[in-house]
Amino acid sequence: MIADTWIRAAVARLNDVERPRAEARLLLAHAMRVPSEHLFSHPEIEIPNEFVIIAEDFLRRRANGEPLSRILGYREFWSLVFAIGQEVLDPRPDTEILVEAGLDAIAGLQTPYILDLGTGSGCILLALLSERKSALGLGLDRSKGACKNALLNSQRLGLSNRAQFVCGDWAEAFSNIGNGFPGFDLVVSNPPYVGTVNGPRPDKATEQFDPPSALYAGPDGLDAYGELALQIPALLAPGGVVVIEIGEGQSAAVTKLFEQAGFIRQRELNDIGNRVRCLTFKLA
Ligand code: GLN
Image (cartoon, rainbow, N blue to C red):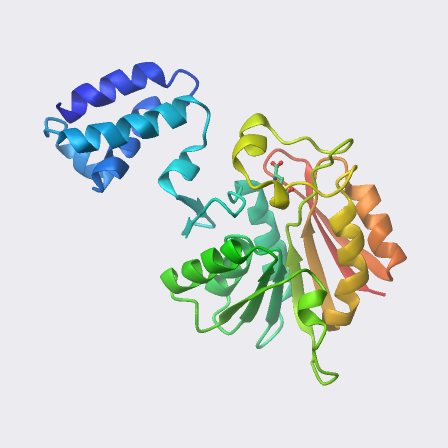
């Protein structure tokens, strides 16, 4: 079959997609393992049958509502390309606000040391390290697959000499940290915050295709914040800053949890849709 013929037929099946032609071309290029520009400049190219079969499978998944990034296995975040496996949350453009807030928090420091709790693909930490060449970072995740995924991204982005990844549950991973540990200058986190009963609801694609362990945090979605608020103080350097993502409507409740643990709220930042998405704290 000719590439252009396949793409035309695919467009007709991608009814709910904003840029069906571009996506159809990307899916076919991914199946053929060629850059999509190649199909753009050679629409008349003949597709070997084995690639048609693979492309048909990608198309069926996309028409079924699976995000393009999941099918392609990568997502752009902070203008960097991140591999995303099944075990990590698909990075969202809204989360880039945490990178902005984090950069602001470490602006005056020579060699900032950054901790990313629940690092997933590593996107927040690695975006920060890509901007601040003298910074060092540690990413923690309880999922082994996520740690591997983040490590792979650090290698692909040429940041593995400044990033380390550790597998473990929040505080447990640091239980044998020595007394002499100077602490992290910045702790960032996009923890799970979807409630199983109340609180922010994920959209259908999120619920279906993102790993549940990266989404759900108790009945009202606040469980992870409660744990983080209690555990971060022992990990912070003097003057250190916490930058966290929150879900819609969680600002007051999360602020309260952190205030109870001795923090003072510094900033409240909005996402692309103008909802409060990020809070920053310092210890009182
Ligand atoms: N941002 C995800 C959503 O759109 C939730 C991710 C999370 O819980 N951290 O629902």
